[in-house]
Length: 214
Ligand code: AP5
Ligand code: ZN
Image (cartoon, rainbow, N blue to C red; front, side, top):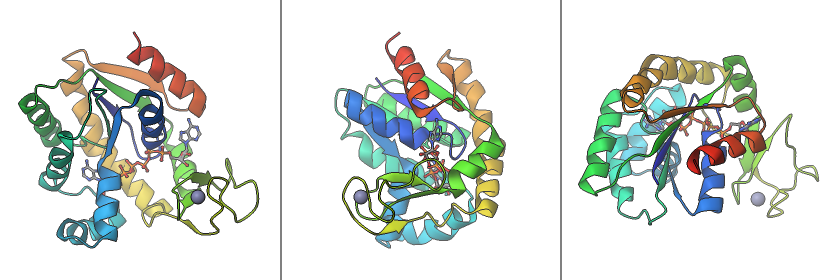
């Protein structure tokens, strides 16, 4: 099964994709993670993408579709979760081509519906373990022992450079202008399912499971 998780920044795409990877053996394909890895390694793609990401704008369609294309052959039989891709109409069309070339199809596009003000709070408060990547939040999930990762015991934490309020507002505007308009492309094909992204992580997970098992 191949699914797209669609929703604005902070909607919970990454959280749910990581869970589906664990519970269903699907492969999470996050263009945001791929781009952050490219920036960290200072590859040619990373050097191009860094300033665009820090401004909260979208990286070019050609770059992200190439990144996805490179990874598609490594998906196993349990399929993929596209997290943060596609984000524009040309990316949606590119994904159809890339899947078609491999004899694969899309099963669902799951839209996480959320309230924008809550998203700003969710995003500006989040941080993660610098060593194992475990996610934390200033308000909702602090480490049990202050300054120590619950999972690996590391004392180093990091925040994404694009998680400040100004950049989050630009990311939300980009979503409204360029990404939300791709929904009709999938609605015409009957692929879209909507989930209340303001519910708890567990409730959102249960709703997604119900869709995938239907
Ligand atoms: P990307 O990495 O994709 O970021 P994003 O879409 O802005 O999404 P986030 O990772 O911020 O949020 P999320 O929906 O995954 O939420 P999460 O689960 O973390 O993209 C970053 C940048 O890369 C873009 O701005 C762009 O420049 C570039 N880029 C990437 N892909 C691109 C593409 N295809 N084309 C062009 N450019 C591209 O949750 C957020 C927080 O909320 C966490 O703290 C979490 O613990 C918490 N949380 C999650 N669910 C819940 C819940 N139900 N209740 C309470 N808290 C919750
Ligand atoms: Zn850790």
